[in-house]
Image (tube, rainbow over the protein chains, first blue to last red):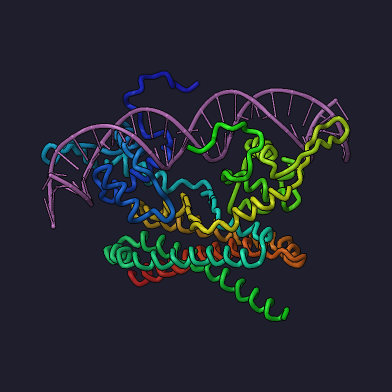
Length: 197
Length: 197
DNA sequence: TTCTCCATGTAAGTAGTTACATGATTGG
DNA sequence: CCAATCATGTAACTACTTACATGGAGAA
């Protein structure tokens, strides 16, 4: 039997946190201070492979502080309240432990675009073609957006942190690959249609 | 005011269904008969971009039948109960309407691998390297698995439905692209480390 | 007889979302 | 003074998931 009935206050790192808590912890480690800033930073950087809504950020911060992974101080500007946070040594340790966890990392995609494409045989050729076009354009647009953002990530790279740029380039490559497959398929279809005439 | 208080029975197509219902409808349209078969088919075909657990399938089938999009008949084998379904004309129409919906299709990825990679600067170089390796291997394995499955999709293509093969190739392409970016980055790091000596 | 597969269903829990609510500060 | 932005918090809902429960059929 483990001694689980001991008083709760100390609560060392031991337990695993839910994913959003690691996002919050990670953002604080990169310099985000208030809950508001965390949300901003998420929307600017990782939104292409992770989103978080504002609501769960504040309970997350509370919990991280209770666990001693971040330390918070009130820092109002004028009469507007504001609470800022810094990562602690325990927080850095917990973040590293999460990153170093050697269990296999699952990959789960849940995409309506691919789902529709899979069933596309259920609709007439022109509609299927439009659907393929829509999926292609979607990826092409994503490539464009990510490319626009690239300079900011390149700056971080120049300052010694290459990982934001790495993930950005994975996003670009990923969507470019999807767009390419769409294009190849559309060409093949066009050829077949011409051959049929 | 719309006349919403009318008796519920007729209930024409009008309303949009939740995504899992379209998965079920689509699978029935492709020949899946029982709830059990639907689950099997999902796990064999679309699990790489969509999953569904067994639980919500049966309520979905009930609802689709109430709406007249599929028709069900009891077909027990021996004393073991079993209910089989077919798509109706109304069902085909609803499926087509969903496929043809011209609103932009959202793309949302939620991947712990990329998330960890983004924060990888928080850990020492060897651990970051291991993490990159893990992400790379994950994609490489996915490419291998999908390639193994390819013949089945190629068969469907030969029989006149190219879309399962298309979605499969998109899966192969984007995982290959991710693995390539990992490889390029790992090489760059290796070079830099050698240069430092 | 026992194991695996076929087949359906429910109950409980969780992880997240949107929408709402509040209010201060800054810039035009 | 009005709009946009900074800043935090809650309540209700939804869309799932896992785990549990049941039981027949076929094969070894």
